[in-house]
Amino acid sequence: MASAPVGDDVYGEDPTVNRLEALTAELLGKEAALFVSSGTMGNLSSVLSHCGRGDEMILGDQAHIYTSEQGGAAALGGVHPRPLPTSHDGTLDLDLVVASIRPDNEHYPRTRLLAIENTHNRSGGRSLPVEYMDAAGRTAHSHGLKLHVDGARLWNAAVALNVSPARLVQEADSVSVCLSKGLGAPLGSVVVGDPDFIQRARRMRKILGGGTRQAGIIAAAGIVAITEMIERLADDHANARRLADGIAKLDGIVLDPETVETDIVYFELHRDDITPAQLSAGLKEHGVLLNPSGGKLLRAVTNLAVSSADVDRTIEAFSRVLDSGAAGAAADALVYG
Ligand SMILES: *Cc1c(COP(=O)(O)O)cnc(C)c1O
Image (cartoon, rainbow, N blue to C red; front, top):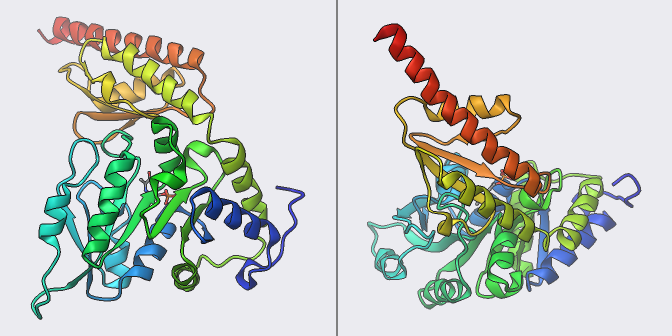
């Protein structure tokens, strides 16, 4: 990063950003690419490049774009979201997608875009297979829609499925991928597509405040991310599975380790004597960070800073905190009983 050659990326003159964009486009089998500051900016620039005000986008009700990006496409671009129920494996029923495409009628918005997510974060980081990705593309294109893939975690899907990232998004018109998350760069995402699309996305990036000057400092880390950090995601996946297998046996943890395909472990805590927030706080005292995600749900994510020995220590910490939850409840029962 310190020795990266830099220039003004707003003028397209930062050689390190240009190299990152060329490498990412090649890796994803598309003609052009655009560096952006975050996954949210990548998705928003993409959606706003495909859809104008009053146009409609079909997406899943558990999609990150729908649940966790402030409804930016609606708030800033007047794009109408049409959320469909997300299946437990992160897919959308493509027959339902077709049934949801609006006929030409002045009462309706015009359906322009289908957006899918791979891996699907809220379904537990599950991978959508090549056949589904292709079918989603065919469905969109045969009805005149574009296909956007929120591929913040696409690298995990490619590694888990043992296919190239390019093959996974062969039918997509645009893809947004993260350089941080599992790949470990400090920040940054890249959007890919055809040159016309990327030119529009470039204008959107600018209006969103994402045109930056010596961004090569960051892009240099992005180049390391995409050239050196993808294959090792398999370690994160193995560690997540190890964690899932370890904690699934503990009292009150509800989890099917078979559903853990990548680096995310979602589980429910079914205990009367300890809440998800208390479990999270207890684990923090053992140096393990894990967020309660609402209701009984918690989410653990492995990453390059977590070794298999760390996972074993984490399982041990879980069982201590859960045991002390029961002990605490027993003590309370003595005092108040
Ligand atoms: C993290 C994530 C994003 C957003 O990325 P940010 O860089 O946090 O804005 C988008 N989609 C999915 C599926 C993600 O996991």
